[in-house]
Length: 120
Image (cartoon, rainbow, N blue to C red; front, side, top):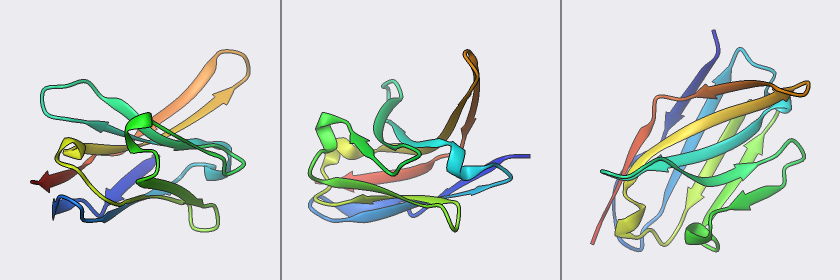
């Protein structure tokens, strides 16, 4: 069974940093686009940052210049370095693995989430 296990969440003051990590198991990691999502309290889940098969990142405008996504294909992990955190970054952060097979078959897996709380 595929597993995505996030770690690294916690409580931090505004302006501080956290590093999230997601360890994947039982999937062909190099074939998956890896994405960090977050869900703030009372709001919908949103994409924060993704990294494709070639290691090219993409970021939401709200985190550009502050967050960095990276992947380690040798260890099947993806990380999210979060700097200059703001109270509005408070959310549950989820790791997602997505792979397109053929024209319309998508494999999609989620981690259990890790809480990030930024105090003002």
